[in-house]
Image (cartoon, rainbow, N blue to C red; front, side):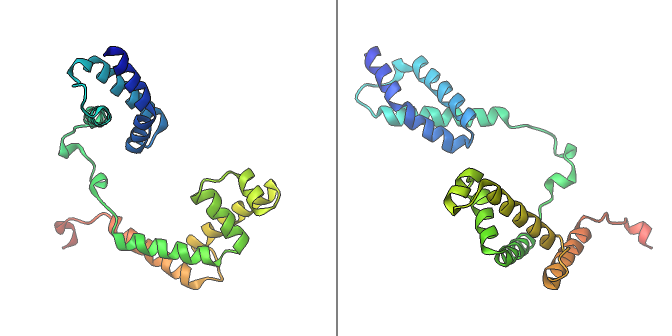
Amino acid sequence: MAHNFHDQVIAILPRLRVQALALTRNRTMAEDLVQDAVCNALAAQDSFIPGTNFSAWMHRILRNRFISDLRKRRETTDIEDIPASVLATTAPHEDRLALKDLAMALDRLPEDQREALIMVVLHGMSYEHLAEATGCAVGTAKSRVFRARRQLESWMIGEDHDAPQVKARVARLRGLLAARTAPRKPEAART
């Protein structure tokens, strides 16, 4: 039975790695999680009932180990010790406005720069693969991404004199943020 158990553990390792990577979203942590789960399974192999679903048993061990690790890492502190800024959240409508402005700015970029930026930033493509996919030199690919980032930055912080709408929205958002983060005066000081 022990030999069969070990064969099953070895056979399920790739699927455990996939599940661990989905849970942790970090390759190193996923490998550690799989190793810990396998150690737990080997220590508890006498509790496994032959003929039952070995895969489900192993995935349950992995999931339980992940939850246990999360609980161990979770910090506990007194609510009074937490700075107020940690508890504050931004309004979702401000995020939507910023994303809308970013989408408008992306649409204004030249097509080659927009394509390069999206492929590198959003899709995680290397400059070499970008150059190969677009039929240009690596230096050209890097230049397109650099110029696109620089142009987006200037539009988003309101430095573009050709885009008064974007500049007005940025100024309005800055004003809203400044009003939210400004310290309030106590009642006694106002009178």
